[in-house]
Each structure stands twice: as C-alpha cells, then as structure tokens.
Amino acid sequence: MEKKDTGDNLQGMPSIHESLEVKRCMNRRLVKAPDTGAAWEAFSQNYLHKEENDVKEPYPDTPRPLISTKILQWTFACAAAVIAILIVFNWNRSGRSDKHLFYEAKDDIAQVTLTDVAGNTTVVDQQQIDMSQQQNQTTVGKSQNNSSVIYNKILHLVTSHGKTCEITLEDGTTIWLNDESSLDFPEHFSKKNRIVEIRGEAFFAVTKDSQRPFIVKGEGFETRVLGTQFNIKSRSANTTKSSVPVTEITLVEGSICITDNKGMEQRLLPGEQYSIKNGQWNRKEVDTYPITQWREGFFYFDQTSLGDILTDVGRWYNVNVVLEKPELMDIILHFVAEKNQSVEEVVASLNMLKVAQITLEGNKIVVRE
Image (cartoon, rainbow, N blue to C red; front, side):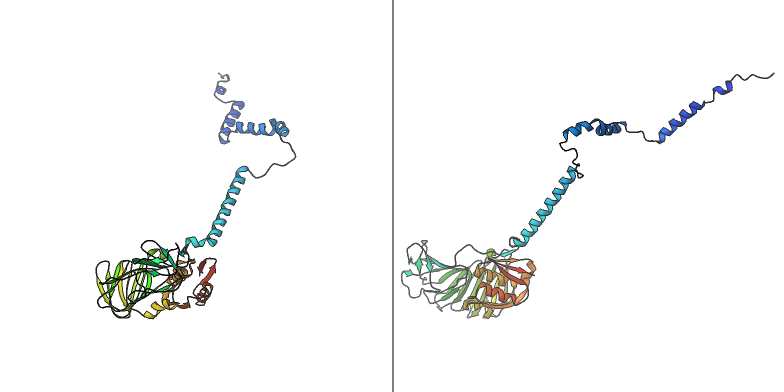
C-alpha cells in the first residue's frame, strides 16, 4: 500500500527565510558593530548645530585655523626653551669669568700704610722708611687722622697691590716688603732678641748681632738668624681660588735655622730652599736669582707655571684673571718683564710666548686656548 506524503519529513528542515536569517547572524559576527553614539555626535555637529554656529561666528567666511591650541602651546614652549638656551650660552661667553675666575682683584687702594698699636694709621708717601735714626718717636708720611706720631710700640706696615716698600729697622736691618704683604715690628728691639712677623713676601738683609738673634715668625714657621740674607714667601690660601697655601724660605747667604709648626728644626745652606705645600715640607737647591729679582722691580719667572705668573701679574695690577681651560695654567714658562710697565705691555709680552691667547678686557685678563 502506497504511503501518503504527510509533510512530516519537511518539519525538521529550515525554510529559505530561516536559512537567510542564519547567514545574516553569522555575518554579523564577522563585522564590527557600528558606533551609533559617534555617528549621532557627528551628525549633530554637522547639521543640528550648523545654524547655531553660523549665528555665533561674526565672520562666517573666515577660515578656521588649521593648527590646534595644543600644537601652538607646544611650539611656544619650544621657542622659549631655545631662547633660554641662547641667553645662557651668551651669558657664559661674556660672564665666563665667574665660572673660571683664577685670581680675583681686591677692592682697595694702592698705598703703603703704617699703623701703631693705638690704631693711628699713616699713609707712607715714600718707598723707603728709615727707622735707624729715630729715637723715641717716629714721623712718617701723612696721617689719615691728623696725627703723625707713631708710638714706641709694635708697628704694622702694609703694602697693597702694585706697591713695595723698603724699610730699615732700628738695628740697621733692611727689609724689602713685596706687594700685598705685611710686617709687624717694634720701633725699638729688646736687649735679648729682635723679633718681627711677616705675611706675604719679604727679602731680609739682617745686620749681624751675636748677642741678639733675629727671629722671623710666620704662618707655621719661625726662622732664627744672626746675620744673613734670605727671602721669605708665605702666601695664604685666599691668594687665588685654586691655589694652596705656600711657604718658601730661600737662603741667599749666611746661615739660617728654621723651625716648623711641629717643632722640627732645619738648617739651610746658601742656595737652598725650604718649602711647604699641602702640609709637606721639602728641601731643595734653587737658583736664588729669579727668586730675588722682584725687589729690583722685575717679574722674573724661570720654569714657572702660567698660573703662578698670572697670579703675580693679577695681584700687582689688581685685575681679575679668567681662563677657559684650567689646564692652561699648568704650562711651564720662562718670562721676564719690568713691573713699571703697564698691564697692556705685560699682556703683549705674554702673548709673544704663543702658548695661549691672552687678552685684556676691562679689568680682567682672559686666557683662551
């Protein structure tokens, strides 16, 4: 018997419409869903608010700027940074002296002064002072306080930049005091000894007196002599910004006994120098001629660093010494010049050595490579 087709075999099969719906669902999984919020915002800005924006703009035909505010702010910030760099660079070129100031000029007057224990200060007019002919009182130069009497006490002799002074003491001892140095001495020596105190640099020609030793005191040392010639250089650490304290005692003739701050004694022979740097004492043979030429009115340097030369030149003329490279100061040179020359002439002579470019700019000597 033939079976009838009841349609049961079609009930489990999808229709054409259902097949299409299944395919659409599958395709949606492969396509990113549209951002309806963003689309609405774009539509609103372009169409809904167009009329409102047209009303607020006073000049609707004026094109809008193509650069955003943030870009403009970033551009201005970069420009400001470039300007700041240029300012600092130019300041360093012109104000390089503050960064590499090797010697600093003093704010004082070029003069020689003599002060007594009471504080009365006399400006010394002459380069030579003779105390050997004075009795109980001494009159020297012009007093700053209308009192020219120097009492029979300890006197304080000071030289500033560009000034030296030769003084003969009561016993006939002659002392040459270099620039920016000081000497403390009594108007009359005692019957037991002759004691003076030195800071800076001085040359001594001591009169012989077997009954009264001549004692020179300084920072960290003491010398004892009977009669001799010697040079003492004792510069403090503030002489330059880069130097260290230096003490050099050089014997020209005779004999001298040195006692350091540790109580150690050394006896020098003529042509020997006893020096201390960085707390270390050193004894060596030297040529005394270059060391003593300053009292003859010369800059005389032999096998001396450019830094030491310019320190003395800067101190004598009271000018700043500025350098671009610190290592330039270590160049060893031989250099001679007269102290009565102008600073311009001395700088010109230094340039003839052709070791650096040295120029005088206002109140400073600038050293470039």
